[in-house]
Image (cartoon, rainbow, N blue to C red; front, side, top):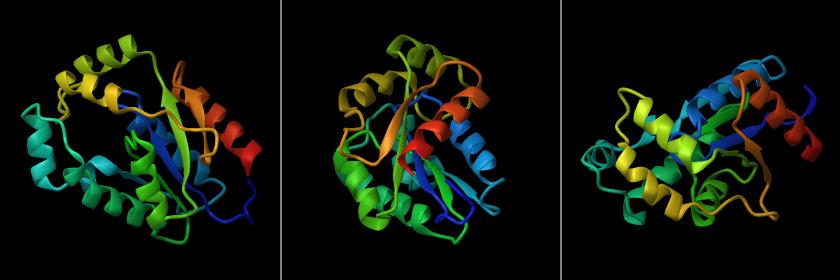
Length: 175
């Protein structure tokens, strides 16, 4: 990835507790040294209030809830001239396809974390609308990034800076 390359459009994906927001923000910051103005968007902020309330009450979203939100995610990813990193669960291939429909240049970084660690992370975080009880539904829905999809799978183990380094190195091998 060089400064003359098109600014990246990256989705950091995975189930709740995988570290999408933390890694995504750090990745955007790091890529911002090569692509000034690189933005970070947390797709949680794009959910309509009804989706947030549904999850807060312990009810998983269905696809009717997700499609408008995924369209907004894809539009946010495509926006701007400097590149964007979006944190988004993007659990199923069809959801990633919806994002790619709005932003064909989308590249995905799937954060891989053992289920036991996900449960611990979700239980230990404060102030998030997604209750730990919904993690099982997310793991049931998860379709890992396929070999024919643009992107990489990265273990989110170790310090955030190391995870970001691994993600960039893996992405650069594809760019």
